[in-house]
Length: 306
Image (cartoon, rainbow, N blue to C red; front, side):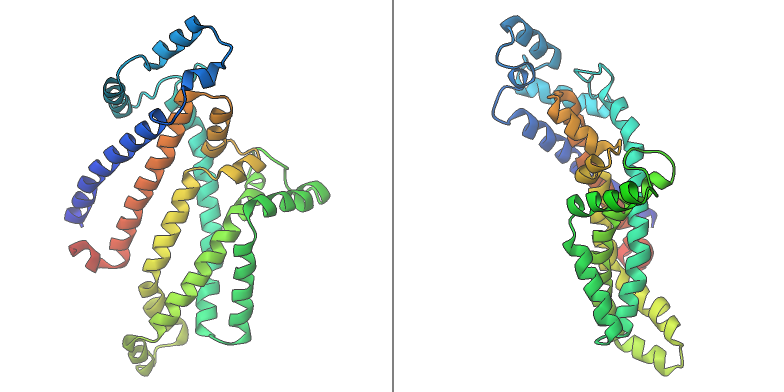
């Protein structure tokens, strides 16, 4: 396991470097003058030159790139043009809220999806299977920008059970978690069903049943443990997108996370903050993929030796 982790960490270095470089060049090589966009066309030339110097845009692209790499390595991403706070500090203040929402949504999705997928697979082509898959199809078909406002109107405005927006106690997590978790649960339940059906047809499952193993043991101990790898893959990608900031959901519920901060930075034309948010989004995917690799090795020990 130590050798496996060492190899994964070594491969992470060029990936992180590539992500940081890609973010830099996408931001800096996008057509248009960012200073003019921030200040507007009516700004004086002196103000433009002052801001350009403050952002380091008066230097060559190579100097800017090397400086950016150094800043990322030290955790110094500059300062917000509007709040004057450090970009890294501003992102970390919001990242906890995004992690909280992401993990709650993922937990909700897994709690619903895995049992539903297992039950549907074990009762393939029955009414239980058809109802389960119909429900998952409905879940996939409901986009967050529709189900979010619907939940607000019914459960926050009409019934008054939950707050409309903002981050407070546990009750403030319910509606945004359901909004994000519904689609994920639908996707994961369908995937769990398909992988379980394939696994239940394997010879070792037939052997376990022939030895007298009970149905629950066959399903959850023998079949589910071997059917989880594709589910872990998709769940990891979904978690990466959530940690990157569920922009639509965070905007609908005024959730103070990285996704909403990204939109605010773009709207305010806060160049350093927007760049830091995009970098955080990209690195979130990278480290979630590393986490998925580790979970792979735990579920299937054979992967450690590849």
